Image (tube, rainbow, N blue to C red; front, side):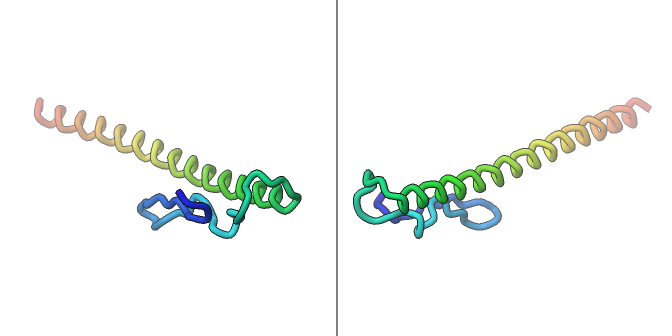
Length: 85
């Protein structure tokens, strides 16, 4: 990956940028300046917000799977009962 290049992930809601272009500084990455520290803090905040959104989506998917599995059990049970009668 080149400096300043974004890494993208495709998902159903479109494309998410994992690295915002404007937060990746040009030049020596090891140079410690107040501006660079601020850039890195902003990048960390950005990454944390993306992680939070992904965690929320995972929780929603887990709940959906649980509901679908329960519905499948109910449907399977009703089908068996109807067949036995």
